[in-house]
Amino acid sequence: MLPSAFLLGVLLFLLTHGREDPGFAAYPFFEQWGGTGSSTPEFRFLEQSLVFFLPLYLVTLLFVLLLAVAENALYGPRRPVARSAFDRAFRRVFPALYMLTVAALVLVGDRLARAYAPGALVGPVLVALTPFAAGLFALVPALVLAAPAAAIMRLERA
Image (tube, rainbow, N blue to C red):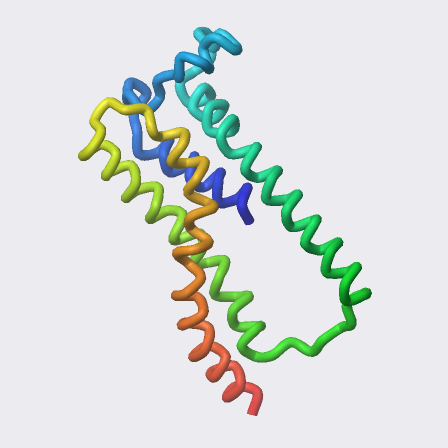
């Protein structure tokens, strides 16, 4: 879900900013690396956001892989377990809340950046970090909303 959330953040940023917006400026180190003078501002923004997002995403994937290998080594292969109604409800509620949280954090973060640091180039970093922060902000509301959804699912089965 992290890549989808990242692309949602990029899309929201691109839709809410014009081509001449200072958020599309290039970082000096980025200009030295590739000389992106000929690319469009939107593509340059996507490139800069990817420079900040991809390393974090790869480290996250590596962490999850190592965690799964360690769990398998300690506890052996996983046995199939029947899913509870709460688990099924959480699996439906969390992705929607996660994407809504990503959208809200991008919009609020951009507004705060414009208010407290006008002209600062924080757009690519904001869009790259938002998918990671949104997971934390969406977790508790998803847990709270999954309980009534699980109860409704149980009533529908009865």
